[in-house]
Structure formats: C-alpha cells, structure tokens
Length: 249
Image (cartoon, rainbow, N blue to C red):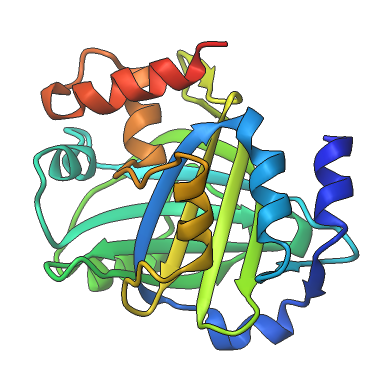
C-alpha cells in the first residue's frame, strides 16, 4: 500500500467540489479487471493525463455497500439473462465523506447507466416506508426487496485533465452475507465513466498497452455467485473462469 500511495502522491489532486462537472449520473461504463500486480505500472503511466480525488488529503477512500434484491433474486437473474432496463438497489456509505445514500442504478436499453439516489442517515437492513416508495417510483412498479449482501472495497477516483471522463479503481474487495464471506483482494476492478463511450480514453490506451482488456463484469453478480454457488450461472461461467484465473498467484 505504501508503494501505491507514493505513486498516487505524484498526481495533481482534485476536490469533490471541483468534480461537480463530471458527476455523470447518466453515462456509459467500460469496466476492466486485472491482477493487482499491474496497478503500479498502470498508475505511473496515467499521471500525465489524470487528476486524483483528494478528500481531507486522502486519496484512497473506503466504500461500504448493502445490496438489496427480491426473494427470488430478480435483479441478479435479470443481469444474468441479459435483460435491458434492469435495476440494482443498494445503500452506499462513502466513508471518508461521511455521506450515505440509498441508490437505484438502472441499465437502459441503450447501454446507459442512470443512477438516482437520496441521502439517508445510515445504512439500514430494512427500507423505511419512504425509502420503499422512492424505490418503487424509480423502478416503476411496486417491488418487495430485502437486504442480501455487503460489498466493501477501497476506491481511488480519477478525473481526466481535459475530457469529461471519470475513472474509478477499486481494490481490496470483500463481500459477505449472513452465512458466508469472500474476497477478490488480488484483483483490481477499474471503470471508465463517460457521457458516451469513446475508445480515445487515455486510460483505455494505457490499459491496452498493458494487455488489460475491457470486460463486462458486475461486482454484485460475481460476489453473489461466490456467496451462493447454487444460483443460475451458465452465462457467467466464462467470467468466473476469468476471475478465478486472475485470483491465482
């Protein structure tokens, strides 16, 4: 971790207020997953092009998320079956910012990710009446959901110095439910967020140089399968093989 901090310290910082122009609540996402051993080289090559989010002079920030789904796992199965206009519901605590939100993410039929959220006091194992009404409104129907699993990780957030592009790099991923727990600590998950997808992204160019290719991957779906291997997973078998290969030393 000290090596990472030394490299990150070489980036020009950006504050939360300065990031207002790149919130990108409606966006296209391009994800990457790769071995953590490649991260130092990747970061060094990124320095001329990106600024790093600094909160109270900290560059690595902890996130705690509690995901909700229906009893029969509608959100997971919608993703597995490739349905468009699918949703994810979660509480997310942005630990370093002392902020917690109830968030609903929708993937529409044009490949756009649209995130809606309301500020809450804390993460809860049960939705209040008001929170349930908010979820129903965003999802577009009355839907009964329950807390399913925690996903926690540390995140480094970057903003391109010129273009309207945000980049998140997630490390030290752990997950758990009431019965089981697991982690993907040897894997880095990066996500390029743009108004419209463009391969001219400097991160994408650098990733290609390091033989890191885009991959459609969901932290929620992968951790769900780790916690409940009996769920339907035939369309995720290649991704699980890919993840298991990355986990190997």
